[in-house]
Each structure stands twice: as C-alpha cells, then as structure tokens.
Image (cartoon, rainbow, N blue to C red; front, side, top):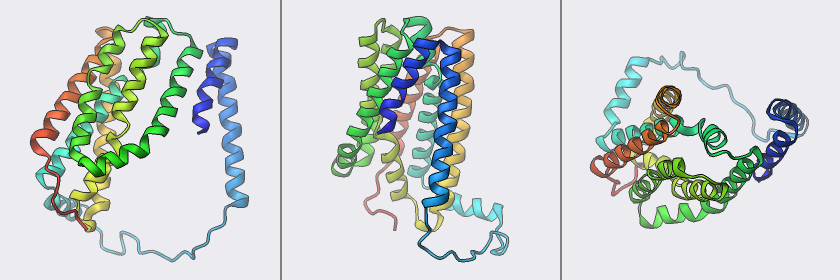
Length: 261
C-alpha cells in the first residue's frame, strides 16, 4: 500500500526541484527508510523457532552434474515449454521495462508528476485485482489464464507508442496491468503442479537462472534497439515475444490431470 503513494511524492519532488535535485532527495529518503526498517528488525523482531545445524551441500556429497542430470529427467515437455515461455515473457518485459518512462517523457511529453500518477494507479489496480485473479485461475484452469494474459498483453505496448496524452497513456498502461497481473503467480502455480516435490527446489533454481539470463538479454536488446533503430522498436519486440510465448503455451503445455505432490 505505501507504494501507491510513493510515486506521487517522487513525481512532485522532480517537478518542483528538477530531475537531479529531486532524485537526490528521493535517494536520501530511501536511505532513511531503509535504516528505520533495519532498526525495527534488529530491535523488535524475535525468532520463535529454534535453529538447527543443517547439513551443508558438501556434507551431503552434492554433485552438480548429477543434480542437473536428475533435473533433466523430471523436465517433462510441458514443464520445459512452460519455462521457455516464461523466459520469453521476461525477455519481453525487460526489453521495454526501462523505456516506458523515457518514451513517455521524451516522445509523448508527459511531466514527471503525470507519470507518477500513472504508476500509482497501476500499483493500486494490481493490489485490487490479485485476489480475484487467483480465483479465476483455480476455476477456469491455469493454462487458459496464462494464454489469455499473454495474448491480451501483446498489443498494448504497440498501442502505447501511438498514445499522445496523459489520459491515453493512463488507459493503456492500466489495461496492461489488468491483462498481465495474473501471469507470474499462475505460472508459478502451474510449474509447481508439473514438478515433483523432490526436485522442486532445483527446478526453481533453473527457472530463476533462465529468467535472469532472459531479462539481461532483453534489457540489452531493448536498449540497443531504442537508440540504434527507434524509440518505438522495443515495444514491437515485446509484442512479438509475447505472441511466440502464447504459441508455445497453446501447442506444448498441457495442464496435468493430477498435480505433483
């Protein structure tokens, strides 16, 4: 909930004091709140469970090659396709994530406070929509929700590039939140359904590495295209990557009849 208000404060600071001074004050605010948070944790957080000495990986005879070999054995075609689709989604989001505000400011001409209003409305919408989204996924099927979410998100970044006013940008980016808010939690739930408990931790590790690499590549590609080809280009790449992910989900992912225990 504090995130709903925070962008408004930053936007007001930047509009009143300029980008440089407003950003400096924002950084000081971040340092101060982090220190207060650390103080609260240090002096008021009490552990209620006794800690036990856990076996280390070396004491268990951990072998990286054997570990990945075991993971591959449990990587069904559906789970593999699901993870690749998620990497494409992360690639797409990283390609545009850093450039919404730049495009809005430099091309569309929005002021900092106008952008902060949009961020606040996005955060508020995400908070309100998360609970009904989980209900929809359980009722109608996780795969359907993933396909609809990615397919609905695909055109909005192109529409964003045609926006020329605060109201137009606000509407497009709110619709983007409405369409995309359910993808990540539903993906995690379906991934758990497809993964045996014995290798679930290692599958999550593999998923985390893959998504981090995809995000890094997406950020690089988005930056190169934004400056070398044109400001709108990364937003077209987003749409293409989302549609490829949708095709992969439709063709290769099958929701299990029985969830993995």
